[in-house]
Each structure stands twice: as C-alpha cells, then as structure tokens.
Image (cartoon, rainbow, N blue to C red):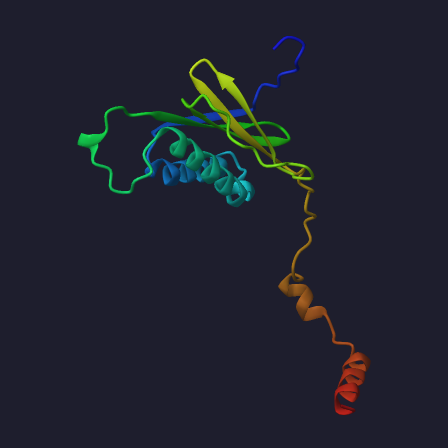
Length: 170
C-alpha cells in the first residue's frame, strides 16, 4: 500500500474456525470475551451483531450451513478467521474466508459503522469498523450525602407546608 497511512492497532486478537454453523456462535463468544478483556464491553452488543452477520456470510460462501452435518459426507473442510483489531478511535472486525467473490456490501451512507472488503491471495477479508466514542470523565459526585451530613440536615418546613397545601388542593 504505497502512500497509504496504516495505523498499528493497540490490541489484536483472532480465532480460526471451521466454516460451519457453530462458527457463528463461537465468533460471538470470542468477540464478547475479547472486547470485555480489552475494557470495551460497552461495544459488545453492537459488535456481536456485526460479527454474526460477517461470519454467517462467510460460512454461507465457503462452509456448511446444515445443522446436522454428516462429517463422512464432507469432502473438504474450509476454515474462516475472525480477527479483532483495537485502535484508539475504533474497533475493527475482520472475517477472512476462501471465497474469491466479494459480498454485496450495504450502502453505508450516513452509517456510523464503516464496511469494506479486500482480496487476499486465497480469498477475501470482509471488515466492519465500529467507532469508539470518547468517554467523558464522570465527576465524583456522591449519590447521597454521607450519613453524618444527613443527620445535620434540617427539613425546610416552609417547603413541606407548601407541598402539603398543594396536595390538599387537588
């Protein structure tokens, strides 16, 4: 990639799976566990939906979708690879399969999730990138005052009387 700026991920993890229906649920578990381990658990729900779609398409393109696979009838076993890349501002999910044909990508006009596909020597990688919104620091505000302050706080009797009068007028 001459002239392209490539960012090195802060985190990187992957898993290879046999291209069967079980790869779909295994990839969901892998993504949820990995994002939680990276401290990005807030992205799990969205990322699981994305990896479910990408792996389902990869298994449909190269594997066996039948729930009751007869392994004696399978002549060739395909593998897929699911990879997570953690960048400073995004999480990228990549799924490699051996099918050469690119998938039909949804029109991402106005979408927050970026999508793409690139060919490899033996197949293709389909990817989706989820933004990681910058977290605002939460102020350390106690939800209720400490117990000793509660004892010192006197109720505003005028306020109590006005509320009481207002409720009686209903």
